Image (cartoon, rainbow, N blue to C red; front, side, top):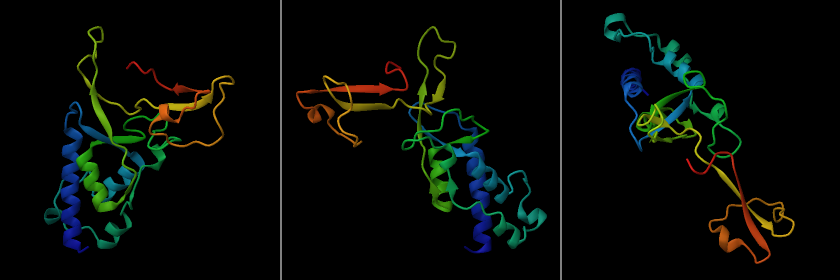
Length: 187
């Protein structure tokens, strides 16, 4: 990447992220948590705090710019134990920053890495809640584990775990389905 292209790309992305941070969440939009450790390194790379243009203050030395390159996006510090599940207890603006999906995809296109941890914006419902109608990001969507169990012993069939697209079809007459959920299913 040429020096001029790299600088203009940094300025464009810096503007896109600043705009994205100011956008209000809307129902059914997708937002991504982005690991704060990577985001802080990226902010140093694009000179986040400096509002001066290179024409006004002069270019940053190329070796400095290259030494500050944040590398590929690394969201692995946010991951829990299964798939794209997030680690419990994460705090916004401490462990992650939230950005609209299109901004994160733009960053990923330039820097690579991941994983993509997109989550849907939902609206709190219910007349009794003071937060009714306020958008929120469902960082921890409902996850259910379904087990095929022997009907008499209630123990899972075999020790293997596999994805079953049609659990009812996988159940023999002497078996039953049980589920375990970490969240109430009536949300």
